[in-house]
Image 1: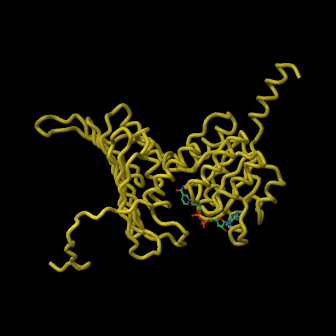
Image 2: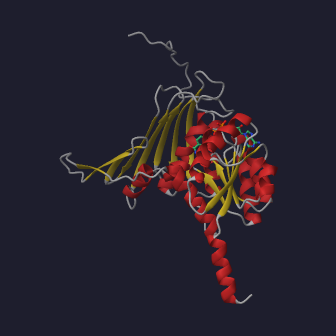
Image 3: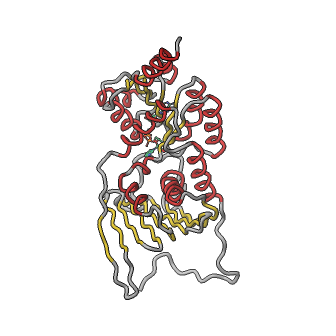
Length: 339
Ligand SMILES: NC(=O)c1ccc[n+]([C@@H]2O[C@H](COP(=O)([O-])OP(=O)(O)OC[C@H]3O[C@@H](n4cnc5c(N)ncnc54)[C@H](O)[C@@H]3O)[C@@H](O)[C@H]2O)c1
């Protein structure tokens, strides 16, 4: 083949519709399938789920084929898959796909343990396939607006609230691995710095695993960060505030309203403005970013290493014992304080 023929063959390869599969057709996988079915230049080969009812729902939603197991999808030939099966299966499914040279986007958290996460990263590296992790909050336009507003600022502290009711189906993880891992990723991404200290407070009010967590962190760059998360709030709330030396930025990730206070004056006066925020669906932007990384061979927007680092911090929160505040016997009031 001449170099010109080689170049045009390369272009044709880049233009060829990528063949994609979705593994897991539950809450998240259904959304993956819905979004992928609407994207140009790809073929949604099918959706894998062992549950017939979930396969039927996926077909009704997207018109795509479905398969009861992964092997049946692989036989059809896929370039890439998105994995939205339960977290404890991410390791096994990701390794099976990577072993076939298939590019992988795996939902957050990357795996059930740091060791399994590292295995996936190493396997993808050895196989030379793209591995991206679905930390979808990074693609929320409100988060992008916050990131832009704090660009070049001297960040002092970050506080994130992510609360809501219990999920309809309890998985085998608590709020730290399920919810706080989103915000650990955001803290690392906003500060572009590793977390070097963790001070967790956890409690299980109703569930077997922790369902309330107040987590405090310090980054290597000296930023203080706090996450308030639980499954005991009757409504969903997702709020981020970032204090920098020159600005105070507040974002509601659900309503996508982002406001900044700036121009602090010695007399306490300051200015305030709402920032422009886009309307894109975060999952759509995430999946387009994944497909772009697959096509270009470039670095994915959220790497496996970053996802493992966030999982490592979440795991450390679960393993760090809280320290007693005082040596002397502590006064213990009733849980229900009356007046
Ligand atoms: N990025 C986010 O904001 C976000 C939100 C929710 C869930 N998630 C993640 O997505 C993953 C799935 O969560 P969910 O809420 O959709 O769970 P879910 O229980 O609704 O769906 C999981 C699906 O996987 C199927 N499944 C089980 N074993 C399988 C196998 N061997 N092969 C293929 N499919 C299999 C189940 O039948 C079910 O349909 C989890 O890792 C979760 O952490 C991410």
